[in-house]
Length: 548
Image (cartoon, rainbow, N blue to C red):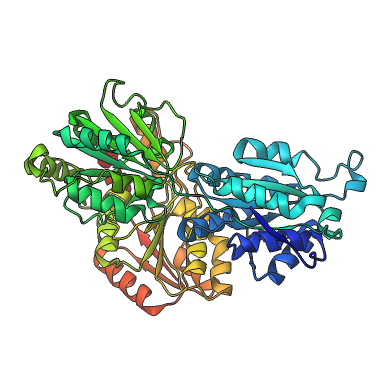
């Protein structure tokens, strides 16, 4: 969508890019600059888009991911040419599979050197195409128009990263006069009255309906509409990991999370197979393990409601409707309050909850702290204003089945690509968006070793993050898989350092704990202190073997 022609064109192409990005709501850009992106960094800052200097390119992408997840506005990733964009690829691929809008503005050599000069040179656009929704060389004659196009693509459901490759001489070139490109306004699309009545009748006829809510259900006003529908029809529901809290998990109809734990999913799938209607709201199979392939037969009665088509064949989607999800959910409300509590029977739902609670219960540790007890303590202390991030590994799977989220999007994680090293940079992004809210990151020692340099970013910016490092000197999830494959443990154990002492070198407070009582006290004090704190928690990983 464009309005009037600018009275005065931006001075340089980089300015046109930054001005358009600002119109789409961008507040932050992340990266590690080289000389090829200096004009882009300057232009962003002069537009009021704060440039955050990270310590590694993947971490910069994870920060941008968290900004989008919490604000709905795209952030920019500005990697330098060659090794900069190459290093960033895991984070860009993560954004693709986490459904996060992001504009990558990659630096490139001057066009006068192309085709001859070869130092740090490869086809950056070709590299990006498999892991972005759109990747092209910038057209400097239509810079604002192309940025608007790229951002429209990035924000279209499902959201994802886009890339424009900027030769250094393009970004420095004088800008052309262009129209004033802004985000498009899209009319809300709803179900035809007859279709709404037909789908509503299917819901009304079901004796054992079940709701599956996914990442798409977090968008816009969907959580409010979804809760109204759940309570009107008395629909028991599961959430994907990223959708935790879409309806408070303390709700009596909440059955917990699905997706990655084979042991927990074995219990959950029993209930799924008992359902006579499955309603899916924003439910995206990119979060699920391969056990969900053909999870139910084509003959199963199912309804899929989503913002747009995902075009997968992981499991049958049944009747499909795409449009404005909150409005469509409102159209399926019953004419009068319906008491469906007896359809499943409270005993059956209670049986499932007890079975899962037994699986993820804390065990008595041989040494240190039970991970399940640690996450139970986090859940007990967390309030609605907390934002939490969790990294990849056994601890993340367990955390999703122990921590109960109180509000939508309260627990950020990489559950599409599943990138290790996510939690700390995502916590930085979260704290930038919400500087006054407590932000607690939970990560394994292997993940901390990948990204602990980002503590410098948190320290430089006086971010009062609380980091909980589950320290077991092992890659526990891989070790567990080796065990289940009857393989000896190889390449999974290492000497884990004292993260509390390392934290002090960054100017943070470091605390080491080896009992649940000490952890509870340390967490309470850290959150209250509003000071960057690392809690190095010695945990006993042995219970993972029964929980997963």
